[in-house]
Amino acid sequence: MHGGDHMARSRDPLGFVLVALSAVSFGTMAIFATFAYRGGASVLGVVVLRFALAAAVLWAVVWLRHLRPWPDRVWHLWILGGILYALQAVLFLQAVRAASPALAALFLYVYPVLVVILSAILRRGAIQRAGVFGLVSASLGLLLVLGLGGRFSWVGALLALGAAAVYSVYILFGQQVIARGDPIVAAAHIALAAVCTLTVAGLVLGGFDFQRFTPQGYVFASLIGLIPGALAMFAFLAGLARIGASRAAILSMLEPVVTVLLSAMLLGEGLGPLQLLGGALVAAGGLCTMLPACGARRGAQAGSDKLSAS
Image (cartoon, rainbow, N blue to C red; front, side, top):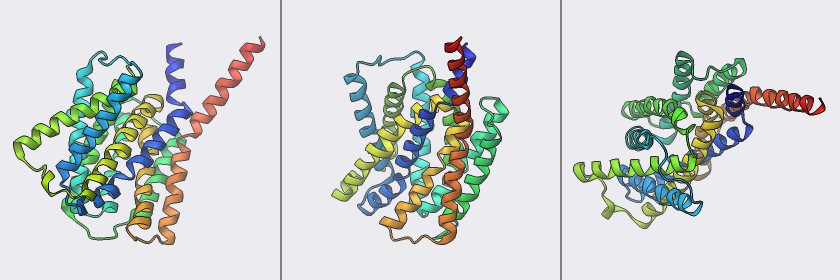
């Protein structure tokens, strides 16, 4: 029975909706960060404000809903947030600053490939044929959507690849940790742990530079805390617990498509026919990961109807 429950949860359509929502939310981060940097913001200042605001919102929700604030093995969540997620955020936002948002997103999104491969090796969630097709389709789509337009920076590329590697470990470790508790509580602890780590790092190494922030810098840093911060963190962790690391990673490939579309609308970057085709391939790849879920749900419903009839 327990195995059947796990299988049903790993194919829960609500999980796909939550991960897609998180991808759209995360997709705004590089754009907001670009505007924040134009407003004098520093990388470390943006990251600290992001996690501080996210933690405040998430802990308010924990208090209002009277959730159990200290789950078992809470130190696992602090490893996720204080080490893995904090490091990934700093690396990615440094990559955005060193290169274009599109280039940073392109190299960051090597991580779904890493997650799928590592999941198969560790036997934590090997995907079916539809998922493999989705991975290939989404990867090709990303190459078409993002390309290598704009200025190329090896520093930015390496920073983004480092963020991808760290994020892959975060997802695989997080899949096991989040399954044992409430995703809102988990997200609250992860955000708080990241704030603590980054604050200590800033006090020791410097780099906050809050005095250089203009109102624009504070506004967009705050938006990062609310949208690709609190909202995206909760939605991703809740979806990850439902559908597993492999499917969550592939569906998250929608994120850079959102980044490119927003770049076109807000930063004046045009989209060509190949980029539009790439966006369609990424969307198709994400939908392919849902096919096993839909089939499983129909099968479960048929089995339930049969039991009811008998």
